[in-house]
Length: 262
Image 1 (spheres, rainbow, N blue to C red):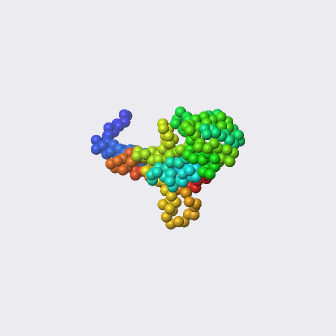
Image 2 (tube, rainbow, N blue to C red):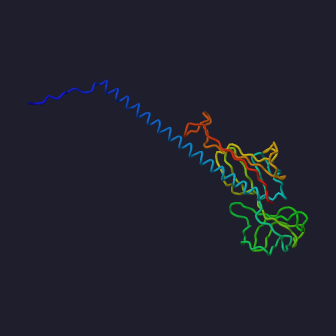
C-alpha cells in the first residue's frame, strides 16, 4: 500500500521571519568584525606612532648632546618654540700646525674628503676656541687629506699652531612644519631635509626653567628640555575623528632633558 506523504511546507510569513532573523544575526556578526578590525587598526597605528616618536626623540637627544655650546649656548640655539639650530660636533682635537687656509693634525687619519661638501648639501666647518691661535668664526672646509683641512675664503686671522684646540662641526636644525611633520634640516644652501616623524601635534624646545618650573631637577646651565607629542592618525578637520577607525586619535607625549657634552 503506497504511503501518502505530507505536502505541507513553510508559509511565506515563516520564510520572511527566518530570513529577517538570519539577516540580524549576520549583521551583528559583521558589525563585530568591523569593530574588531577598526580596533586593531587603531592599536597598530598607535603602536607605530609611539615607536616613531621614540625614534625621533632618541635621535634629537643624541644630536643635541653633541652641540658645541662653547660656540652657541643651547638656550640661544632655540630660535622658535618648535625650532632649534646648533653646531653639531663631529671631531675635536689639537692642531699640529697650519696656515691661514689650512689646519694640520698629524694625530688624525681622516678619510680623504670626508669633510668636503656633499651632494645632499652637507657642509662642514672648523673653528678654533677663543684664546688659542687662529680663534674666530667658523670656516667652511672644502677638501681634506688624512691629516690636513683646507678652507674656503681668507681663512684664519692667525695661523693655528700646536696649542690650537679646534672643533669640526656642521650646523643642524630640528623643526616642526605646519603640516605636522618633524624634520632634521641640513642648515645650509640646498641642504637635504630628513623626515623624522609625521602626525606631530606639538614640538617644544625650552630651557629647564620652562620644563621644570618647580625646580625639582638639578641640572647645569644650558640644559634643554625637549617635549614631543604625536597622535595616532590625522583627524578629520570636521569630525575630529580618525577616518579609518571613526574614533578620536590617541596622543603620545615624550619629554627629555638634554645636557650637552661639549
